[in-house]
Length: 178
Image 1 (cartoon, rainbow, N blue to C red):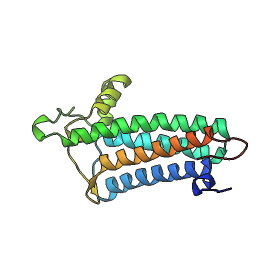
Image 2: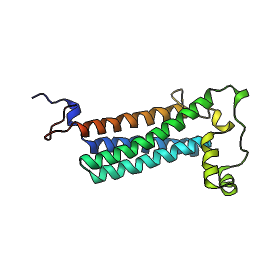
Image 3: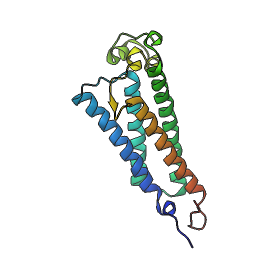
Image 4: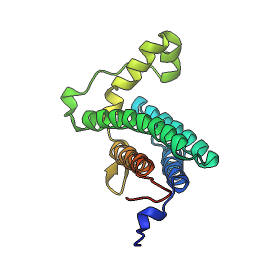
C-alpha cells in the first residue's frame, strides 16, 4: 500500500501551522507599527483582529486534538473567519488600487474617539468600509503591501482548512485516501 506524505499530516499539525501563520502575521504587524512607525489604518486593525481570532481558534483546536467532528467544527469556524478576512483584505487591496482622486473621504477621527461617538454597528461599518488612510500603502514587505500579504495569508489559511475538511470526510476505516 502506497502512503503519500499528505496522508501523514494530521489535523493537529495543520492547526499548529495556522496558529503560527497568524502569530507571525500579527507579530510582524506589531513590529512594523512600533519599530518602523507604520501607523495602521482601520482595515489593518480589522485584519489583525481577524488573524488573532483565527489564531485563538486554531490554538484551541491544536490543544484539544479533536477527532473528525471536532476537526470539522474548528475548520468550519476558521473557514468562516478566513473568508471574512479575505473579504476585508480584498477590499483593502481594492482601495489601495484606486487613484488618489477616487479615495474615500476620511472620517477624520482616531478610532478611540470614533468608537465613543457612534454605536457599535455603525463603528464596525465605518471601520470595515475603509477611509483615505486605508488607500495609502504605508509599508511593504519584499515589495508587497501589507494588505496583499494579508490576502495571501487568509487564502492560505482557507486552503489549509479546506484540506482539513476534505481529509476528515475521506477517512474510512482509519485510512485516508487524499
